[in-house]
Image 1 (cartoon, rainbow, N blue to C red):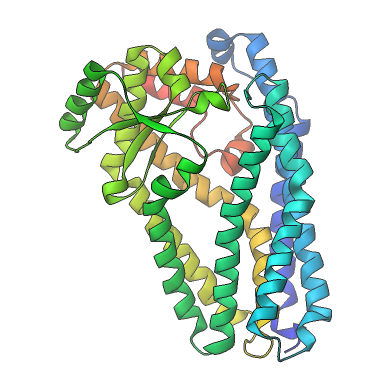
Image 2 (image 1 turned 45 degrees about the horizontal axis):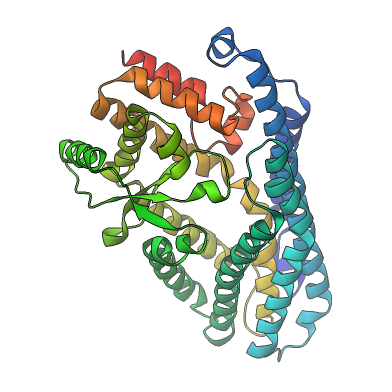
Amino acid sequence: MDAKVFPIFFWIILIAVWLVLLGIIFFAGVLARPAYSSEAANYFGQDFLTRASSYSRLKLLAYVIDRVLFAAYGFLLFFLGWKYLGRNPSIGMGRAMAYIAIFLVFLYVITFPVSYWRSFLIERHYGFTTQPFGLWFIDYLKGFMVSFTIAFVGLSGLYALIRYVPKYWWIYAFVMAAVLLLLGTILYPLIVAPLFYHFQPLDDPSMEQEIKNMAEDAGIQIKTVLVADASRRTNKANAYFTGLGRTRRIVLYDNLVNHFSREKIMAVVAHEMGHWKMGHIFQWFLISSAAFFVFIFGLSRFGPRVGADGFRTILAIFLIYALLSVIVLPVENAISRRFEREADQISLQLTDDPDYNIQLFVSIAQANYSNVEPNPWIQYILYSHPPIMERIRHAQQHQ
């Protein structure tokens, strides 16, 4: 196999889009001075907006550096692998798995300083983290083991398919990925989440009954609401909906339960019920499966030929993924924002109290130093949720 199977225009387009998006993030999110409306200043005050902007710009800078390192490492592996590792057509499964493991370990070594700066030093500077370095590092190692295992199994399995069933490898790869994605969605609350948090049922019988009554009004069944001991790690407030089937659950941070009013907590729960009612997690599964099918089918048709040179395909996939991790963000986040708007709408319907929803948005933003009115380009590329001021204005229209 030679490099001609990778059309030069493919790489030019891929790299150009990647550079443009990262350039926009850097110039619009890191260098540009933020501009806030008078309405945002009335809700939050100039001091908060300034500090939140500073926090956001540092996090965005860390993100850009991390993605550049990831892509540079991908290019290095691709170049070295294409020149040396792929020469031997008899590269065995064991050797390939060893290479994959080494590549992944070195990726984490290279990106560790940025991860430390982004998720520990910046968080500590702004008063969010409650962890000593030792506990943070243990969490980092746990995260490494989870992501390493997923990537190692995925890439090794992909190489086995390319090597042993070269004609139909992409079909088997799609089926394998869909099954693993479904299992991961179901098992995440049972296996991965408990590695980082301890969960307890909500210890407030009257609120639990109120939640069940709200769920009945929404036409859904809910057995329990879980509270995560997030305060051991952060001062941020959050909540999320996770799982499928019997593993579906609403999780509240204990910071939210302990420091927010009952009405605000109910607004949070109503929002998460909105995700449940709309079936967003299952929709995400279908969308992710379809996206992977398009990717793997395109690779089988227009990418490198497979067989003896199968390991070069793995290196190509690694590099393409490093670039696509940025390129797909606008589409991915546009879908996520649509889901969040739908959940907000259901929350307004279930609570029938826009004021408490507005108060919740303000409190969440203050607790997390959210950039409440980001640059439109940053919102378009990176925001998985509508900006806080957009959510406030939507709630005002419901009044």
